[in-house]
Length: 211
Image (cartoon, rainbow, N blue to C red):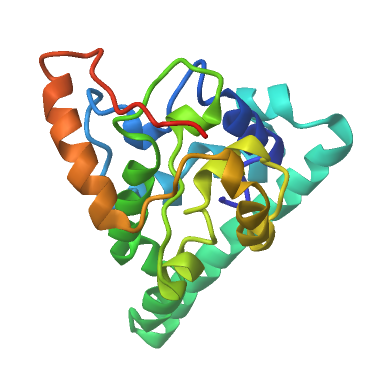
């Protein structure tokens, strides 16, 4: 989660995803997002928060005592970006950006691959997160890169559990959840045909079997 995005907003999203909105990646009929996510580097939220003015989202979700933390972390984040730009100019090299800023660009395809797999094709407008969210078992490298968010059903059911405790949470409640997917191949093999069918039948979806 970006430093300038309020934690409270992330928690509210986790609680609300089933009944009102899906994550950006699941709005499949919306215009395709910028492939490089350039809007996140020049994110209006980051600049506004760094200036000390919270966005509408921030005003809605962040308690008054916590707002200074949002402003402080936004200024640190923006300062890092400016420092990297200055280092590139002084060194006359793109190497600093390749190590600190640009990985967000050339590693973005992993994020897209994961994000799409977590909700797309499942039921919408249901309160039970077990029906609209997937847990996918991944290898240790991908789990590390994705901060254990592959345990996504658990994350949405208990959004305040920190990422490093999600595997333990999964072990605790797995008998109460649908069987996790054995990998991304299994997810996409089921999901892609469903997305094609939704073009002519929007009500078509994958219905998970509950224990």
